[in-house]
Image (cartoon, rainbow, N blue to C red; front, side):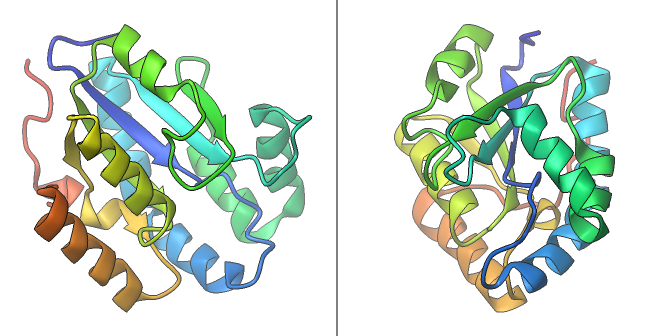
Length: 187
């Protein structure tokens, strides 16, 4: 599934029950970005470029990714709507993570190396936590990093804006919205 351009889409923590303190505002903001993220994922799918779901396991060490998807669907409301729109297809990869960064104690570095990835597009929630940690770890591993502003959310807009500003200033990450990037993949 690797492409010559070496770009992979990382979808961080979007498959989520939002059943934690601060989860309700995060769920509302996650739902707002879900259509843009679905459109970006469709671009990756059309280009046959790798899409990797990296999700918190919420300390359920015996569960699998599809168990989490089913729990979100069963929860109803916003978790079910997001899972219905964004659940992975058979062509997508998925990894459960124990902590904030998608790279920490996961198989993500090995998977990206096997796929020939040099650029990661980091999307999802929360911009000021797991997305930020993942983008920083990607930068430390010398990946080119793009965090499309319209495909990340936080509990509040100011928290999202601060995280994006930090990524631009300290990591050199692009935060150009997904809709403004033409020709993501060569023809």
